[in-house]
Length: 296
Ligand SMILES: Nc1ncnc2c1ncn2[C@@H]1O[C@H](COP(=O)(O)OP(=O)(O)OP(=O)(O)O)[C@@H](O)[C@H]1O
Image 1: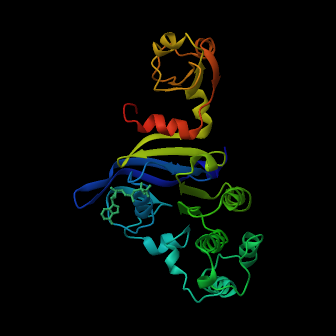
Image 2: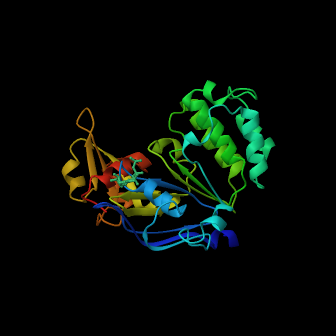
């Protein structure tokens, strides 16, 4: 493990944010180290955007929060030199051309690399003289992402970055994020509902529900902790006795059960293998099981 990987980039303790009488963050604790790509995943209204806004110093809140060693409430300006995020798409003026947008960001941001931005735009329909008002919604997002990803920032915060983009571009975007942006001195925190599309690039996953972190784990520990079993017909009762955390029926009398080795006493690999075919669950199935509310 390198020195960079020991460094804490974000430390949050007991974060609390109440809107009117609704607690969007309710005692949220987490720690993110340098060189990680963290997926912040939760249902609608769970508090993901609020957590990101707190990290960026965009909302007041209670609790302890340090981002790159700074308090976003009082040191926002210094913090913004090292953090990059996708703001509301509306910030791009409708009359601006692609080339002018690139020139503008190059003028205001010392860490912006125009050539890199152009590489990100390669393969899209965004040509130099196209104006924002002539672009489709997805094309505007593409321009935004290219501008932001060409800034060499220590922390990149992405809130639903691929919303409104087609599947071809989404796949390409995540691949490029991994290949052209990320390195061990950088940290990325990303929220999305399209869990399947990002799970292969994440190093860590955080599930958030009702303003609390309910699962926080490196991706490579999930395979050890969770097992999904396609339980053979006739072995359901035996499997159920091992306390699966979730169960769903399939055609032809088969059932898929999900086991958490920390909760299901006796659910060791050999025992589970004897019940049917086993595999590591996808993040989406783990998410659904976790969010049902009876567990974690
Ligand atoms: N400006 C606001 N005023 C009042 N309530 C708010 C405000 N922003 C968020 N909330 C409430 O706080 C809670 C968390 O919202 P937040 O936007 O953080 O959720 P989210 O996890 O990002 O959801 P989604 O996946 O739907 O984007 C919700 O109940 C929401 O209604």
